[in-house]
Amino acid sequence: MLETRSLNIETHFMAAGEIDIKYVAHLARLHLTTDEEKKLGAQLGHILGYIEKLKELDVTGVEPTAHAVPMVNVTRMDEIRPSLANEDALRNAPAKANGLFIVPKIVE
Amino acid sequence: MLNQLTISELTAKLSKREISARQAMQACLDQISRVDGKIHAFISHDPADALAQADEADKLLTKNGQDAARPLLGVPIAIKDVLAVKNQPLNCGSKILGNFISPYDATVVKKIKAAGGVVFGRLNMDEFAMGSSTENSAFGVTRNPWDVTRIPGGSSGGSAAAVAADETIAALGSDTGGSIRQPAALCGCVGLKPTYGRVSRYGLVAFASSLDQIGPFTKDVRDAAIILGVIAGHDPNDSTSIPQPVPNYASKLTGNIKGLKLGLPKEYMIGGLDTEVNSAIDAAVKNFQELGAEIVEISLPHTDYAVATYYIIATAEASANLARFDGIRYGMRVDGADPIELYRRTRGAGFGAEVKRRIILGTYVLSSGYYDAYYLRAQKVRTLIRNDFLKAYEKVDAIITPTTPTAAFKIGEKSDDPLQMYLSDIFTISCNLAGICGISIPCGFTKSPRLPIGLQLLGRPFGEETLLKIAHACEQKTLCYKQKAAV
Image (cartoon, rainbow over all chains, first blue to last red; front, side, top):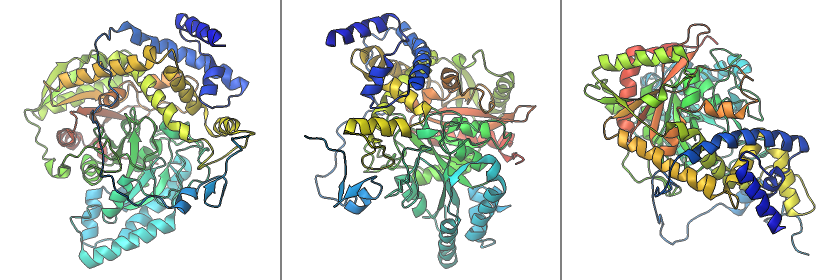
């Protein structure tokens, strides 16, 4: 399984513009219909082809910018402050009971 | 017509008690009833709540008169559907939020309310602010008030159209790659994207957190200065907002820009630039020279890489930010046998095509084996783009460009070709990558059909004072902003 995956990646590096849509949609937890997979695959191939142009640039020694205004270690006093009340937090929940969110069973 | 007034005109009349805040609000509501069936700028609005707020403003105006602490007392301001207003719906133009009602006010909304503003309405937008035409809303297409067969721009198309059609005095929007400046240009109003960190993002539904910024849509530059003065400033709820004093922007609009240096980037005079847009920019340059500004040719050598860089960084951040829409805590839910299936089905049913496209692209560029080649490389190119601007600002006070390569295009013209749509953002995107401030003001019109053309001015980080001063001087010379769409 692992080997197959890395093989795919190699191939895709060579032929930029091919995405393993099913795999990426799984990572994104996003259900796509077969039609959507086909359409998205073609469009994203086109977009990735365009994005390839960044490879023209030499970025050796260039620091990456994560934020335009670099700020580090922004902290506040470690003290208790008011926060969202339980009923406000649950107000928009699709399913709730006893002050909690209801979710499908996650442990056997 | 009270709904056509600027903030400064309206507040002058309110303080003399020539008119009431209720009359002003009612004039906007009447205009909405008259034209919004055609324009569809609003997803929803609550007339009773808006009038009740106006009545409160009238009480304060009667009791205390106009008051420096409340520069927006009695002024109707409509809100893009991406900002939280307590007890009002919030959908981000998407189905996935279901019947979401905001439990709190965004900081900008809180500040507008504290300044006396009448906050009303939910303005249409591209779903999760992803788009350049407001064709990607789950609530239908918004139309350009100058020509209803054309797009109003996006993603804040509802905000721009509502201001241009005088359905409100002003509006708030958000700008991640041009979503304020581009629709402002295409609808013929003023749109300001502040410097990253100038305005708190608390209560703004995140698209790309390192690029998003909230800003005003207004009928003139002075109004943009007034609103920025209200919404700017540090907020403990947004660790990326910068603790820097907020100047009195409106008081600096002297009209005198003698000796200021304006840069004309040679890379922006591209093929594909419409000839009428080109001549409108030439005319603007001439106006600036007559006003005593000096025009300097500059170079922003990495301009050609901005769109590619943006669509890696923005989609990567979006794919992470939109993970929160999983059907558990809010919004719609499509059940599944296990949590993974629930997530997949909910997201598959709730998100529209453009949002899916960007989540897939963003997930892909962050995925194992591709991170360095795409995401990290894009962040490095972002540094090069930002350095281009910082270097240019050693020589000039602001940069002049067209806001868009063409005037408003037809509805449906680019909706099947996402890359063409992305490329229409070429002039606005670098500003967000560099984290600087930018404004679009009307600077001319195409002949037939008659459509607005926008001039973009880009300023230094936290250089809004100078930026607004230059924009104001230009606007007062051309008076283009006085022209109204015949809705």
